Amino acid sequence: MDHKQVTLGQGNRLSLTLDELSRYQNQCAKHFSFSMTLACPLSCKHCLVGAGPDQGHTTMPFEDAQVYASQMEELYACGVRSIGFTGGEALLAAKQVGVISQKAAEAGLVCGIVTSGYFFRDERAIRKLVKKYPGIQVWNLSIDAYHLEFVAKEQIKLAYEVIKSMGLKVDLRLTYHAPATDMDQEILDYLQSFAEPDDLSCQKIRKYGRARQLDMPGEPENIHWTRPCVTQGVVIRYDGSVAPCCCSLVESRLHPFQFGNARERKLKDIYRDFMCHPLLQHIRLLGFSELIRWLTDSPYFEELPDYLPDDICDLCPVLFNHPTISRYLDYKAATPENVLRTAVATFRLMQEKYMLEDALNRFINLRDKLEGYEQACELLQHPENFSLY
Image: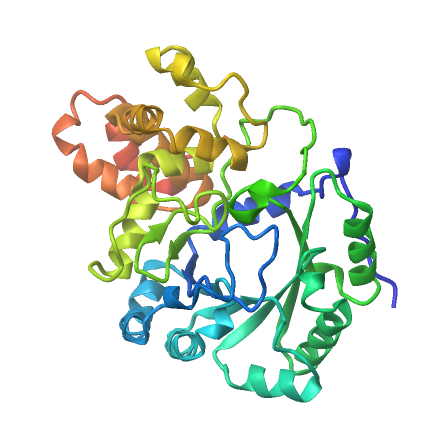
């Protein structure tokens, strides 16, 4: 069978089409993730979260998983349509994944899990393990130069073919260096020799966790701070704390995107606060350019480092892990004028109503002073009267 090839883009970066970008942006409102544990049978040099065999104490308690599982219907009613399980190795939290995925599937949610494939030793083991989780419809298999120290690429191919034969969706996730190495290309070529193109996705290594120690110089890029943040939505960590994404801030606690703890709050309330957060929704829709302009015109500009990363996922922690800068940006994004502008944009471009509803309720006492308030009310009630252009 002939396969359409995934290619490396300019500067050895894997390309992302506009359609894919749009899909990623919209995914945030429909997806909810659980980081089940930092325990992992692997101990990879590039691991973003520093997972390993000595992290078993981080595993989500089963009692917490039961509470989360009981709220799946509420998440569906909010508009969430898929649930993801990550780690560490999420399969090490077997009972927890089982109870949440079962209730999620019963509520109509599509469940997916990310795994290294470590436990997929042969066809019998693969079929037995997959059958333990009837609520999981999507299996994401990770592969890269560091995983190959622990999991053979032939093992990943076997798992791909067996799980596909069971009628389930399989995604192969390749993590690559920047710039891409010969080994990265060799792995990509191998995956393309048997996998359907729609079953293959790629992401570059981020220099966080153990990857900070890698000798990986990065690569020059055009500065595109207008690129939107493509967070895939809320991440509930193993300890109940909440992360705003599964990338640069997934294990950071020092940022302005705070939503409390899932052990104390309903998941639907965390989701709604996430969808209404002014700064988070601003960067998700409009990128980082305006944030840099705000800082340029402020006394906080001098607190910026001399070099700012070109890649927004690397720029993000530089800004949001800095206490005074992040507080200032949070304040700017939360002014009534900026909130209403962002809320209108998310409603018109993403068809998401939560932030607009929240903004109109919060600023009702300013309706005579806040420019655009009445038009925003009309937009929410009669969107068919407004052209996107």
